[in-house]
Length: 146
Image 1 (cartoon, rainbow, N blue to C red):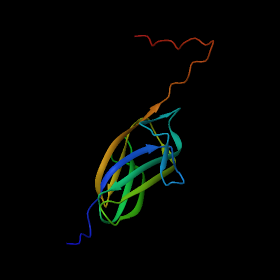
Image 2 (cartoon, one colour):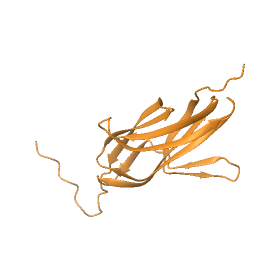
Image 3 (cartoon, one colour):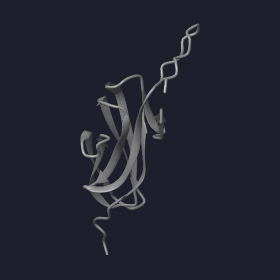
Image 4 (tube, rainbow, N blue to C red):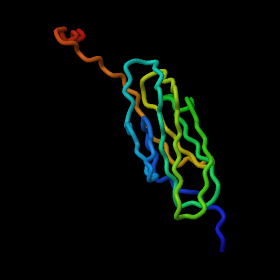
């Protein structure tokens, strides 16, 4: 029996600042992020990448990566890429690059990774406001009164 199509498994999906490839073909992920810390909102992130690897599939596929706003319905950005796996022992590595990503507010955003419109992974990505560093010689901010 000749199998012509097996939906692949998502081996990993990681948010990072950038990805480089060595001469050997191996990848170097830079700035793997569990959250995004920003100085203020709204803010424009210069570059947010989602590195993904697919395995154990056969056929031609379309990967979709979405960044969803905290309201869990608004799609801020979406990237699609086509890839193929000829054999279940092969893998495919994809990189979705979101340049100049506008982040309107702090909160819990979501990253969704789909293959052929089938959701394979959805995970939170917190956007946090950084507290400004205290300058030497300045008094600490006053505590709010009750």
